[in-house]
Amino acid sequence: MKINSVLWFFLLFALIVNSPRVIADSDPLDLFFESTETFSADFQQTVLGEDLELLQESIGRFVLQRPGRLLWTYGEPVEQMIVADGDRLWIYDVSLEQVVVRRQDKGLGATPAGLLADVKRPEQSYLVERLGIQQGIYWVSLFPKDSEGPFSQIQLGFDEGVLRFVQMLDQLEQVTRVQFENISVNQDIDAQVFVLDVPGHVDVIREDL
Image (cartoon, rainbow, N blue to C red; front, side, top):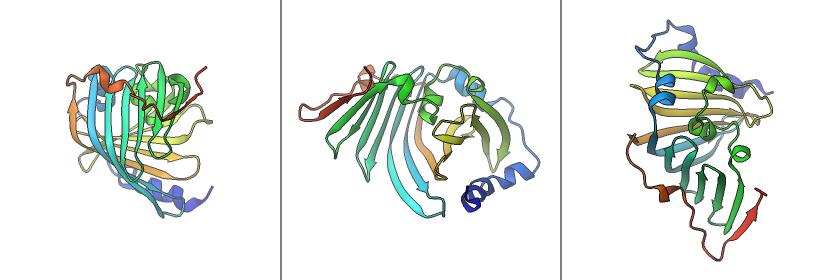
């Protein structure tokens, strides 16, 4: 494990860990899992490598209907759609003209999308550390109990009780940061949002059988 990337990731939160913690009046993590039925937002995503080099910047749209349904689309630089309908996970790479279909429980697994869409309490699959409020954001760190998963740590940041940030440290020492904007919570969402209309010319690879 290279120390520089790990230090970078945790130094982002040094002020949180080393300063007096401010506790929210109500727990935003509990509130999210108890009361959030739908969540939709635009997002900006940044990926940094183990030596802090910028690997990728992208923008897109995230739509969630709990439990189990979500749409995650990337508009730039690579157009991609990820759709979970509660049973199957569909991953559509537009440039490759290819759709991969997987069982949702296998495809999402211990990912942030799977965490947010799951009806189960996060404590069942994660060790949860509530870090408190820093600069107006309430931070929670989640450490997967299954060490074989793709991420060694996930952090959620809540702004006045609303999910604003998701940050991930993966097994390759890469850090992914997602910031949500134009957020809507518990608004009606058309069920067709979670149905992928696969064009006829696109190859479909079934990994769900």
